[in-house]
Structure formats: C-alpha cells, structure tokens
Length: 179
Image (cartoon, rainbow, N blue to C red; front, side, top):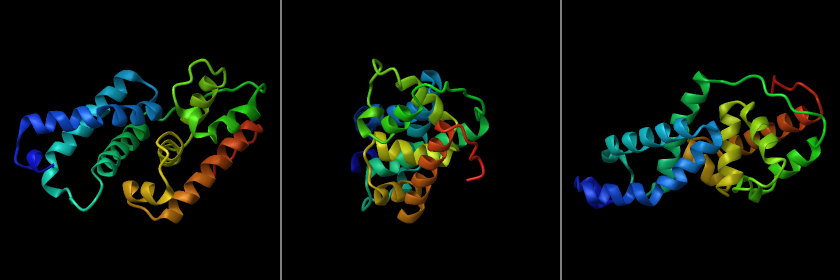
C-alpha cells in the first residue's frame, strides 16, 4: 500500500490484479450485467486511486474497496431500478432456501433455481441487495458489513432480516414492498 501511496504504477497494477476478481464478482452479482459490472469495477478502482491519500491504514483495504464498490453499485442501481420480474409458482420454497445457503451464491449454473434466485434478488432495494451479497456471497459477518457500508451492525442485521422477509413474501405471492 505504501508503494501505491508513493505513486508506483506497478504497485497499483498488482493491487488491482489482487482485488479485481472479488470486486467484479461482488458487483456482477448485484447488477447482473457483465458490461455494467466491468464498468463499475473500473470506476471503483479509479475512485480508489483518486482517494488513496484518504485511506486509513489501520482499516482493511478489501473492506474499503468493497465500500467504494457498494457505493458505486447502489448509485447505479438507483438509476436503473428493475421493477418487474415474474416467477412461476413452482419452486418458490427452494429459491428462498437456496438463498440462505452461502454456496448458492457461488457459480452454480447447473442449479435450476439459480436464475430464479438472481431475478428475485434484483427486485430488492439496493441496500438490501448489497447486504445479501456481502453476507451470503462474500461470507462476511454483520460487523464487517457494517464497516464497509458505514452503518451499525444492528442496521445490517435489520436489512438482512427485511430482505429475507421481502423474499419470503414474494415467494408466497405477497407484496411486501412497504418494508
């Protein structure tokens, strides 16, 4: 990190190589579009580079990068909110059950519920979508997520609960959009 602060281009390139895949995967799961995820990943690293002088070395670098990525993604999702996604009645229970398992967020293209899960999650508000991604796909604890999002752990737990409740309601055919 010191080499990046000193302006060494090679050090920055190595840092990008180290974290690029994780940042991209996080963003891709949230936006569902390869070109958009790539653009947002590049913008994340650009913002990171521009704000290097504000980095607090006592904090986690990956948490800081994910925070920048989360902020970028929330802004993007607010601008491009997708409101309508339909699910058939079949398999609703399995989709929610799949969501609650961390490995469901891994690359499981052979899982028939994967596409349903991804579509359902896109209906969530960006704040809920991000906590689900960080908790289930990244395996982070509420305290770590709180640090990334600059909120309290209680807020993270509340958002997770509301996201799960919203998903459960949709799976049962209820509209719980006022959560």
